[in-house]
Length: 131
Image (cartoon, rainbow, N blue to C red; front, side, top):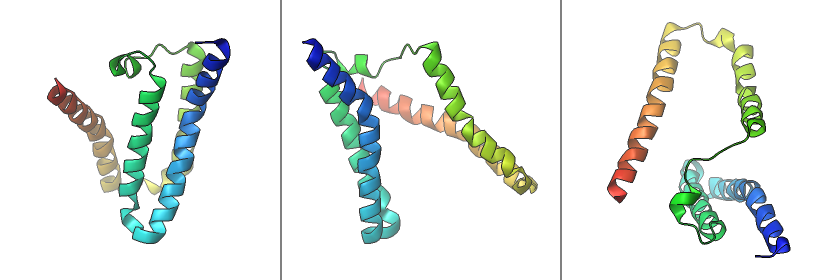
């Protein structure tokens, strides 16, 4: 692979999340006017198809397992992730007065506790079925 081809491939890899989000926005906008609350179905199909297509196109000669394996991020990327991830925290702090009802707090904490387990269970179950 030449340097120009490698540079173009890297550029497409870096732009692919923005392109996927833009296409997803267009799909959601178009289908929300057609099928209202069911617009998530075509959006999900397009989103996962685009992700699969990007993995297929950009993985090169590597196996898919190598593409979706554990990453080795730099400290700068991790720091940027923390900074971006803290933005919703400011929204929480500005709206903390809405959390006065104990039921809201209990359900919020239950939801926050269950989501990671359900994601892991579903993911591991899917991986187990693929073996």
